[in-house]
Image (cartoon, rainbow over all chains, first blue to last red; front, side, top):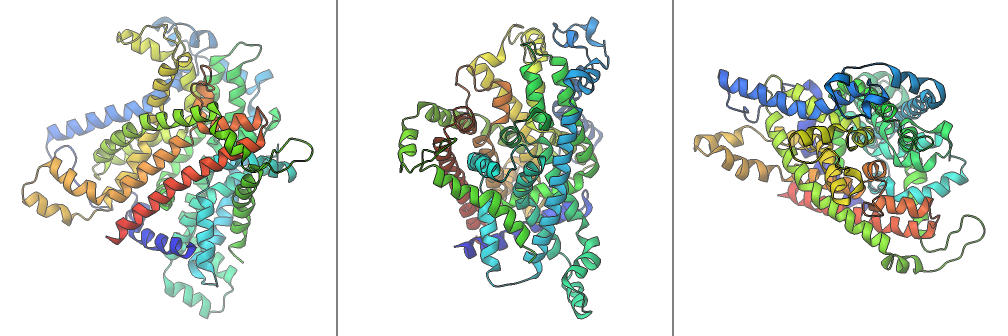
Length: 317
Length: 280
């Protein structure tokens, strides 16, 4: 049964290889155009294409830009009926309040960073080792182990929160940023192992054999021969895990009960609930923008890798 | 061994909890003190638990509402960005941005903008004459579900776009040549060639979106907290409340087992479907 799953996975992934690899190699311009959208040449066609593209993009980006502007409006402006008179009344007051004083969320931002960076590094490390093992070494039962890992990967983490809560309580991993990072690492491994296995499979076989002939140890080969070739895969994996962990909510909500350990998304639910019954919507907007900015910066900077990981991870199922 | 760390993680935080969850679901697990087996009593209680049934019905309803719009919008976007014309990479990046930012931050923003009087949603919609500016979106079941569905389609369409686009770009060009020579219309090429060849990507994007909807939590927790009453409680929130508010760990575990089975079935169907595709 498990063998069957892994065999299926094998055919499946070879087939789905080409678009991913094409995207990964050049990013843009490598895949043949399926069809020239909106009428190929022609000035009219081009104007239509750019106008359409701008309008469509605006639908997706403008709300985020709008909220960013709104986050600079003082609380009073945010909670009043919108008016052109007060709209441009921008100030740093929300951010000042969030980053100092009693509603300080710096600590929560730091918690989020610690957890997301730790999960990203751990996922990259563990997935690289596993990908290396699955790609280059055939051992007894390796198909079964890969099958087992795949089956495990299909468990939605939302569905094991309750038993995991009890288990982590016993292991003293509740209210622990380390515990949360271990949890995130586990559920980022599916994408990670898959991406890293593919990365290793793309390394030319001659290179592997040459290293073996030279008598290099397994780990020396990994570090000296493979490292430059698998860096894009590692970047994909780390980035994917970082974004997942930075934005994750229900796990953090379940496993952290101590305010000072809250990650940013959970801390914002406190802001949303408000203190003494009064909700400060200016603070909430500024907090949401602080949660948003790292995602955009990281994604825009490294999107080539991210899309690759996402597509191959998704193809894994 | 190279694989053992991964195996350790998966065993400790996925496989073991799953088995442990099944075990707990057969007991009356209390917070302190001894527990004993009660057989399938939790499952029996589940069948008569109106709140859980209601949350399943609601989750199905929500999934039914958002799946088709996410797919249709995502497909149209994929058609638009799939060529490698100048600018298409830029458009892709921008359309995908809501997905990257994540539903949590966006739900908080939506809460602010859906407030009556002060929110941007009512400001825009009342000026267009669609709703009054005192519409309280998040305190009426229908309105809240509408607002959340619009938010989710906006959030998730970019992911469907990316998956379908990758599939479209994997279709060899030559396949289209003869159809064009035959003078087939754009619609018939799309419908008769692209869609069948894209079956795998279509199945994949639909399944990812359906599972995502099944496991929805964030937007409901943040925007309605399940309200008004319990009318917008999805399954994961129902489990969350049963475990962490009502402290009924056994029952919550039974709910989780049901959820794993449902999601497992969807994944199984996906595998079957994809396998059939790669053999043909």
